[in-house]
Structures are given as structure tokens and as C-alpha cells.
Amino acid sequence: MIEVNELTKRYGAVTAVNGLTFTVRPGRVTGFLGPNGAGKSTTMRMILGLNRPTSGSATIDGHPFDRHKAGLRHAGALLDAGDVHGGRTAAAHLHALARGNGLPRRRVAEVLEEVGLAGVARRRIAGFSLGMRQRLGIAAALLGDPPVLLFDEPVNGLDPEGVRWVRGLFRRLAAEGRTVLVSSHLMSEMENTADHLVVIGRGELIAAQALAAFAARGAGASVTVRTPDPDGLTAVLTPEGAAVRPADGRALTVTGLSAARIGELAHQHRIMLYELAPRTASLEQAFMELTADRADYRADSRADSWADSRADYRADSRAGDRR
Ligand SMILES: Nc1ncnc2c1ncn2[C@@H]1O[C@H](COP(=O)(O)OP(=O)(O)OP(=O)(O)O)[C@@H](O)[C@H]1O
Image 1 (spheres, rainbow, N blue to C red):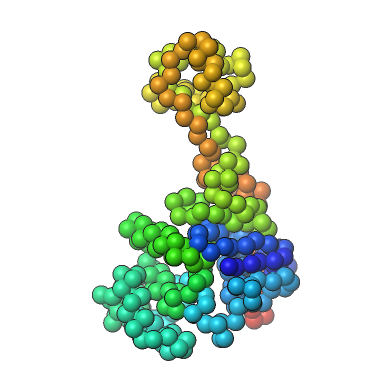
Image 2: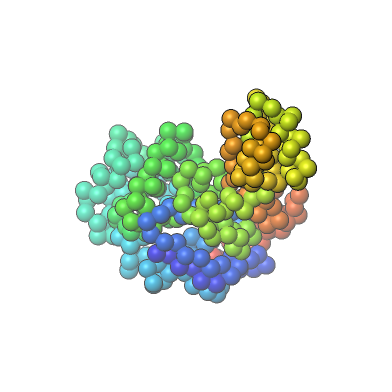
């Protein structure tokens, strides 16, 4: 289990993470979502003991994670797939990690097989595509067979088959009882993967809840109704406070009334229904609505904020706390 408590990280004038509190439980995939620059990577790095919090705490199974002591057996992570020595082969890279963490050599072949890189194990990483590097990073995370796994934007660079594979992998790891935290700035990537969501914006918590409950927070909930008499039904529903729009075919999209009430009214007026389907707001819609005022880098606005924060970034990088 990962516990984040009042976690804050400042870089000079930039507050990357601000009083963040959430829990990541085992046995399910938790999606860690937020617009670009929301503070996801910074939070993950603090959980892994790579960045020091300004205040607050992050623990793995009750203790601050010490990668030198605990190592890859306790927690595995994919943070930056580009952060590998290009001159090494995939196998040599993993062998070095295994040696450094006291892991058996056989794990290298096992994880290479698992991520689909067994055929290129002897090739230099410099020649790898971004997708292959992501797979190698995932192999490194799995090397110690750890109960806790963190993946920062793992889908970047993967082709559609790779995306499907990685989703299946996360679901399997969670089903095995592991704690799985996966970050993304795209809701669509989480829709078919995560059971639970932690959503942040500008370093602050926006939501920590089940995926379905999060979707229900969006304003776009509606009911799709199919009937041979759309005009008659519209005339019945409108005075009851519904907004009715034509949808594909002879269907109607109704907002402002529940499916049950629409069914009752149709029955009272002897209007036949072929379909009566409640639709929750799409996750993407809920995500956009809830993060709208906390996204730093949306097209059209905030060019200044981007420039400011990059300037701070450069200043702070020189000061030493490099990512
Ligand atoms: N070493 C650093 N020095 C200064 N500022 C930093 C540093 N690392 C991160 N930041 C700033 O902290 C904020 C959060 O960055 P972070 O990379 O954690 O966000 P993110 O949610 O992972 O974004 P993305 O989806 O774009 O990867 C940003 O404003 C970023 O510019």
C-alpha cells in the first residue's frame, strides 16, 4: 500500500505538489491523472525516495521507501524510459540491475520474455524505439517481482498492440494482489485499465474515488430513448422539465429526467419505447470539467505561466535537485 500524507514539494517559486493526501491500495489498478505539469512525476519520485518532500510524507507499506535498503524487491518503477545507458544491451542493463539488487540472473530472461523483448535481448538500447524502451523500463520494474509498482506515463510510444498488452499486464499485476499506480495525462488511457482514480491539478487533489463514481461527477449524464413516436414523446417530456435532442436514427437524447421517470411518462401516454438507456458522462468529459481551472498548459491561455514555470525549472535545476 502507498500512503501519501499532506505531501508538498516546492521548487523555488513553483509549488509542484501542494498538501496532497491519498492512499493507493493493493489488488486494483489506480490511475494517477492530471493535466501536464500537475505534479504526477514529482509525487511518484517522492514516493520512491528520489526527491525529498518540502513537507509531509509518502510511505510504501508503512515506511518511507529507501531504494538502497529495500530495492527492487519491494517496489519497482518505470519513471523515465529514456534514462538508460544506450551503449548497453537490454540483457546487460537488466543483469546490472539484478546484480545490484541481489536478484537471481534467471529473472532477466523471465522479464525480457514477459515484455516481449527476448528476441532483442542482445541488441544495444541505443537502437531501441521509444516503445521498446518503455517495455525495457517495465521489465526493470518487474525484475524484483515486487508487491508495489509505479508506472509514469507507460503508454507513451507504445503501438496499439503494445497499449493492449500493457493494460492486460497492469490488470494481471493487480489481480495478483499487487499495488499498481499508473500515471497519465489522458483519461482515455485509464478508461479501460483503472479501477480507481487519483486526479490532481496544479499539485492539489481533485478526486480520489472509484472510476464509475468519478464519471458520475461530470455534468453530461443523459438518457438515450428510442421510440417510433419521437414527436409525441418529446411533447410529453418537455413540460416535465426535460431537454430533448434528436440523436442518431430515431433516438432522442434526454437530459433532466431519470430513465425511470421517462419510462413512467411514456407508459402513461401509451407511447412505445424500443430503448431506454441511461448514459453517464464520459470520463473524458468529467476529467476536463474538473481540471479545467487547474490546467496550466491548455491551448489558448496561460502562455505566461508556462514561461514562468520553465524559467523557475531552469533556475532550480542549476541549484541541484534535478529530476
Ligand atoms: N526539478 C524541478 N525544478 C523546478 N520545477 C520543477 C522540477 N520538476 C518539476 N517541476 C515543476 O513542477 C510542476 C510539476 O511537474 P511534474 O513533472 O511533476 O508534472 P506531471 O504531472 O508529471 O506533468 P507531465 O504530465 O507533463 O509529465 C511543473 O510546473 C514542473 O515544471
